[in-house]
Image (cartoon, rainbow, N blue to C red; front, side, top):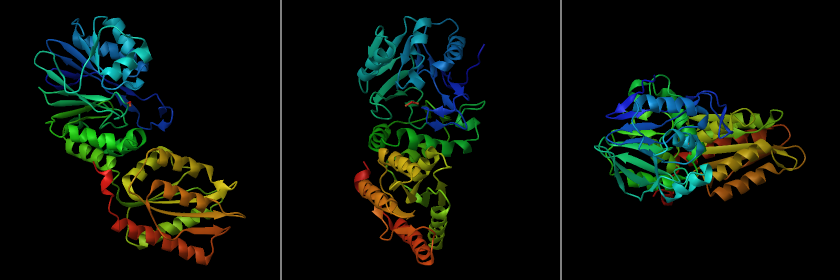
Length: 405
Ligand code: FEO
C-alpha cells in the first residue's frame, strides 16, 4: 500500500514520524515531534539501514513489505543500537528470519544483550565493504557519536552517507523527507537542541568522525532523525564542526532563578550592561520557565554565559544547581562567564557559582555581584558593570586550541 519516497537510485525512505511521545528519552520535550529514519536499498541484494522505535513497528514492517514486493530482505545494517533505532530488530527478524544482521563487534554484542538475537550475524571491520550488487557499502566506525558501537555506512555508488544520529534534528518530516522539498527553517534550532542535549558531551569523538569523513564525496546525508540533507550539507557539517569544537557565536546567555523578583531584576540589569557594550545577541532564561533543553541549546550556541541565583537553604536555588549539572555533564568548553546572586541572611549562591566556573576552567569576569535582599544603587551599578565586563571579555575571547582536533 505504501508509496515510499525514493531519495536516490534504489534507495527508499521507510522511516516514521512520532507525534505521540511528549519527551525524548523521557526528558527532552518534543513540541515538533521527531522522526525515526530508516532506509531501504533494493539492489540485487536488499539491505535495510537501521530500524525504528518499536511503537511504530507495524507501520514500519508495512513500509518495508510494500517496497520489497515479496523479495527477501538480505541484510539489516545497524549503525546505532539505541532503542529508538534498534527497537524493531526482533520484529523484523520474525518477518525475515534469514536476514543477516550486520554490525561491528560492539553492535552485535548489544543485539544479543538487548534482544537476545545471536544468529545470522555478520561482524564487519572498520573500512570493510559489503556489495549488494551495484551498491557498495563501506563501513566507518565512529565510536561515541553517540554510543561506543556507533558507525556510519557510506554507499560508495550513490555517495550517500547513512550517518546514524549525527546531523540529526528533532522535528517530524511533514509530507516530504528531503531538504530540497521541505522548508527547513524549523530544523536549525531543533538540530542545535538535538546536538547539544543528545551528543553535546562528545565533542572530541565528533571531531574525529568529521576528520575521518572529510575525504568522502557526499550527495546525501541520511541521518536517523530529521531531514535527508542534500542542499544544506555544507551548513549541517559546519554546524557539527562548530558545536563539537565548543565554538560559540558572539552573544550572551543570561540564566537566572528568582523566587520574588530580586534576582530577576539583577538579571535585567546585567543584560542592560551587556547591551551597553554593543552586544545584540542577548538571551535571558528564567530557569523556572524555560525548558532546560532550550537553555542548553543556547549555552552551546553562544560564547558568553552569565548565571544568577538566590541563596536557597544555604545552597544555590535548586533549579539553577540542576542546570549547572547539565552543563557540567556536557563538558562545555570555551565560554566566558559571569555570575551574580542574592541572599537574605547568609550568602552561598555566588560562592557556588565561583566554584562552578573554576571547575569548568572558563574565563571569568573579575567582578561578581552579591546583593543582600533588595537591589540597591551600588549593586545596581555593579550589575551593569558585570554585563559590560562579560561582553568585553566575550568580544576578545579566543578559543583554546586544544579543543580543536
Ligand atoms: Fe537516536 Fe542515540 O539515538
